[in-house]
Length: 469
Image: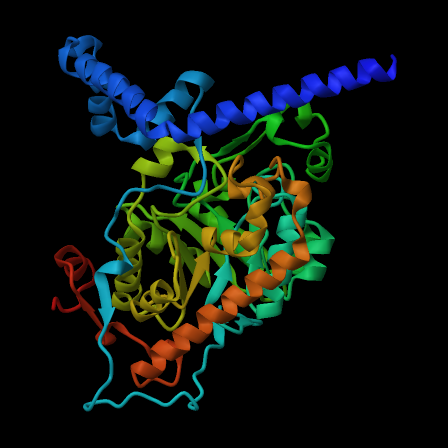
């Protein structure tokens, strides 16, 4: 190509650029005219269609459906239409049950004086006070069961255990695989007993700071759990000791078989107490309307700690019908469990842990006031650990894409950053609770009681028995 040809092409290029600039300028200067003209034509056409088409073929029919069902239920039903199997729903229900929001603390003023910031407030908590080696944690907040492979990927579980250890609280192995590295990372480790093929070994039980027999939970009642092949990785299947699960999937049975016979349940508690050298033995149950009968059976079996999970409890994935339509609200479960233990003279013998929808330091302190010795947090801890790392997932993936066992962004998660975030969250929560105790004139979080509360919602006053303002 000669220099003359190059010059011609340059000239044409400059002309094209000039024409584009001129068109752009004209378009910009005439926007007020053509934009209004186009908008009015489209808008008028839309209004005619909306107001003239029969309702059966009218776009407004969709608005009726949205109002009737709600956006969430429409999406969930569409997912059912796509998958053709029980819809696995994460995190928990969005139903608005009576909750701790209906309660307020009554601050100390003249009759009882509030305390200055310099006054120390005790947060240390003893779990399993009658056990030979009770679990002593720095605050009445524990990290709930979120198992490796069942719910979370290994780095995320490690992060939770590191963060809990920094804060001096306990973390829970859940129904996932127990690994020696988890014991090494955790300062206080709760080992959960279940009937899956990878159930904890004698060694795992021996080194536990508390053992928790899982019979049920708020998000899936007392049902078993199906783990589909597509939710597993090769490493998880190998850690489960089930390499074939990559093609067959696997199943966690409902509860433990010993729960079918009360004598067997007592023998299980005795065995666990013996093999652990006297660690507290807890039982985790979903709150049902037969709660008192369930508690009586647990007491006779000899459990040191009872964990009651309310209907707001979440999980990685459970059938939506169990998440949304089963169980008792956490507030109801707590009050009924506390009343049962007090009425039967068991309050000094058995510790009570509540879980399910515990979100804030206010929720936590109110739970203590209503009788809980400690609370489990799951979703709150999960999001505390993800913290600003969610920028690696949103807006195209959910924040939990870095947390779930097969999450699409799991490899981008920094477990040490997550641990630091969780530690700061837990520290912030307990410091706020201490501020609340000082405002009530109390020097221990465990001195806060129901007399410090008032209710501003009638149903909450009825459920809790505290005065209605």
